[in-house]
Image 1: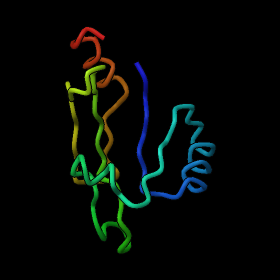
Image 2: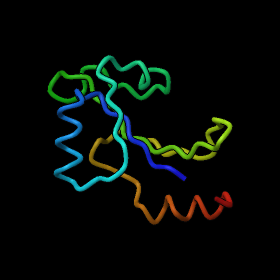
Image 3: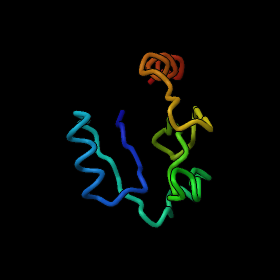
Image 4: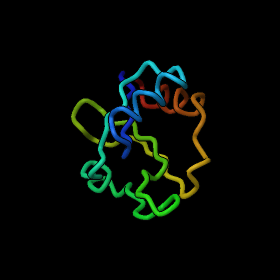
Length: 93
C-alpha cells in the first residue's frame, strides 16, 4: 500500500506544505493540472480565482482500477484516516 497526493501547487510550495504538516508520503506537483483533469478533479478558478484540486481520495489497486473513491465539493472536508483504513480492510488490502 502506498499513499500519494497530487497538488496543483509548484514543487517548492508542495514541499514546504508537506514539511509544515509533517507529511512523509510523496506529494506530486501538477501545476498544469494534467493529472487532475484526467480524474476530473481540477476546480478551475476555485479559491481566489486560482485553479485548485477538488478534494478526493482514491484507493487504486495494482492494476490501476479505482476500487473506492471519496469526492467532496468543499475543500475543507476530508475523509478520516479511520474511514480509509476501514475501506482497505473491506477490500482485503
